[in-house]
Length: 197
Length: 115
Image (cartoon, rainbow over all chains, first blue to last red):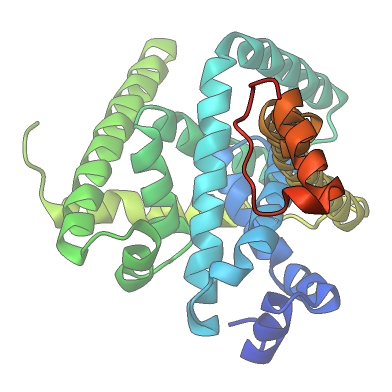
């Protein structure tokens, strides 16, 4: 826990100052999680504000301060789902945005200011995002929460309200799908290299 | 789907997740994050209170309309026809006569017949 239980209790009783402190403590972590879940840096703050807005109006339903973090992650996961569903509906719009992004990246590369490390990171980000685009939203978010955010099965149980065995099965299948996509991506890249050589 | 060895899955994917986590550090919130968040909270609060006000106003409106109908249909017609006006002219005249003439006390005149 990043904060004391008393602070959560105060926020729950309507103390806006306490709520502000809660947001200050968690916003960086939550924004990071959202960034990795949705993969669109320009919308991270918007989704983050939505998460804390939902937290503000649902804190009175929190049964105990001890379960605050799973509660906050649940709100985060739900907001990310909602965002991804909205994005799916605006798919065409998104494609035009992506091409704009690509133009910007090409401009930056042309300027020669991009460092090698940043370029490698960008490649990793793109690679994982493209792998995750090949699985369902549910698998994508579950894998992110487990593998990247490092949540335990117990915490995931509280977030998803399902038992551990069901989670294990879902995780295993999701990993299988991602690995399959990863291997076909590697095979394709290798083949491409081979052709170039 | 063909079954894969869990160890093989983890061996291949775990380094990828680690690298991805390093490539995506937690971003810092911008200066406008907190003010915008409070604006949204306030906007929602106003929306909630105005919707409560709307419900409250609708309830009062419905009550007022119901009361108006009840008054129009039941109460006002009753007030406009008091029981005193329901007696006919002869009854009223007989009652007035019996009160005015002490000699007639205890004598009941047949109503409606000339003396």
